[in-house]
Image (tube, rainbow, N blue to C red; front, side, top):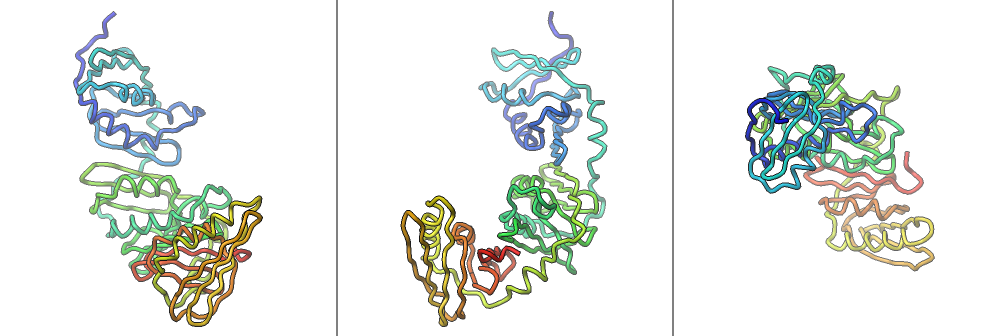
Length: 359
């Protein structure tokens, strides 16, 4: 039995590009079937996994949800153009000599989720998008996989006058960035899933709109038409005092990171994690700035030395593997509480707590 209606020709590469853009918002869990689909509204392609939503312009003659099998099948074809035809809740796809059929879920099944996405504001706040995305990329650095607190599951945005201050933390490290801009609330936590997609999808969208409210966050690119949204995370009853606990106690002069630093901490990390238990590294700064690193485990030991000319004396224990994460920045300083790495005059920073001082 042949499907009824006229098939619509479309570019396989263009459709695959759209599917790839929204794929991160397709759920891997089958607990809620509608969240496991690519949703075609006739005008846009949408995916929502219960945490983040992504949509792109995509005109089609049919509406409904199609399983992610569609993308997998299209990736196996070399056809330039494909035919799409919806007939009795089945999507018929013809790609060169290949034909396949996929079930379509009614668009009405997805209406409740479609209606939750925030609207693009008519008069958005002015936000420096390139600065915000670089700050966001930096702030994500310390966010791990722990689900203990909301501020460990995403990036916290804090409004201070005409700047947005961003930080992420896993208690052992804190990463930070700031950007020119404003939002609708004094403080909000954006899920790490939103942050990752924001940095990936909007790196070329200098004029994108960022809207952060008490309940949700939206990024919209007028050039690409991409929309990314998520509900903000509910903060703890006592929110982390980022400035009082992290910034203020670790103020000080910065010193250029020596060229030998990256290799030195890499060697320390190798010895430190080669034993049965992770071994801490002793870091000693003499008056004048000579820095000694010493790591010993049952597999061996390593000593290294470099100079932070003019740095005052400090003596602490550190996790060398965490220090290595800051080696790509420009400056550093060792304080009583942490080793601080930074660049762009402190606009971007990474704090590594001394071992035993994770608070």
